[in-house]
Image (cartoon, rainbow, N blue to C red; front, side, top):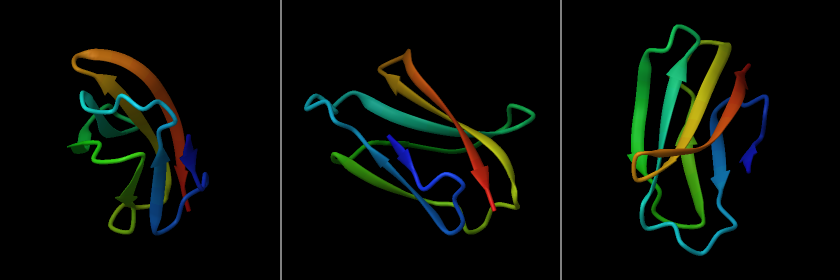
Amino acid sequence: LAYPNPASDHLTLKVIDDNIENLSYQLYDITGKLLKSNKLTGSETLISMSKFVPAVYFLKIKDNQKEVKIFKIIKN
């Protein structure tokens, strides 16, 4: 779960699965440029969006190297 969407200052990534040890996220802009990447540290991860311009972004969730989910994020 990724909320709020549209986002302004931050985005919360909530994982319901208990097994998060191999999970990470990558945030991309509309052109596919990687902007931010990090491992998930708990069931809820806060991602700062304040330095990004209003646009559409893609948040990829990966388990090791396997893509699990892609969120389309709108930044206000």
